[in-house]
Image (cartoon, rainbow, N blue to C red; front, side):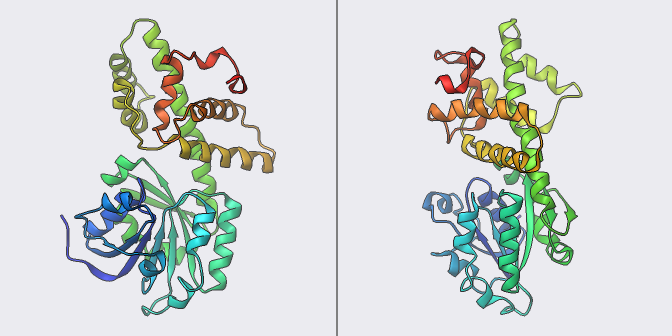
Length: 308
């Protein structure tokens, strides 16, 4: 039920496939939300959501007590985190301003953002999102947060309006580390599911039948259930794009190199996603990995990604 906008202004910058539904959840819960995204298609999808759409990020942020960001890269964040957008308004609403950043970036980039905002008197709460765009639309995503605990506790009403659960995991960039590791499971899990489906199919078991069986085993999960319709219909309209999973696995591989960790399965999985990328599938859902097994071009087992 959509309520009457209430309380201090909340800004939401980044209204894409994930940010848009999350912002809409806030508005539906009765928060006064002003949003911005440079993509007019993204803002157009929010028609009727009671989100006030601003013409610039600065306009959206001006006067907001809390600023939520959900963008693709640190470069995008840097474009938002300027002193005239944030620090000039810090405290203007009678309380210290907080940025709740829902983007997926490296721990090093996150620490740099925290330091920059801290110099301007702005709190920086890292909010990692676990779940797809569809899960966000139905308030089924989970959040793991790190940063100042007082900022986390102050803004739990926002988290509760957007998703089903949230947890605080530390004072600094722990949420980024957790999210990067979780995304390794997501990327590898999708590859494992696709490979198992194709093996079952080659042995004469239909996709729906096999996935129904999997759902009833200890391996059944909300993630596998969410991907079942796409795999059965071979419909890879993006819920989580291939471009995003390759970015996320790059973050994991970079972190592993810096820390001396070994991620051979992640490396091989990333090679398969890169094959998909070179076929022009970046904006398809990352379940399109399935098409490597079923397309006439050949199976991924046929050689290295470098052969393409």
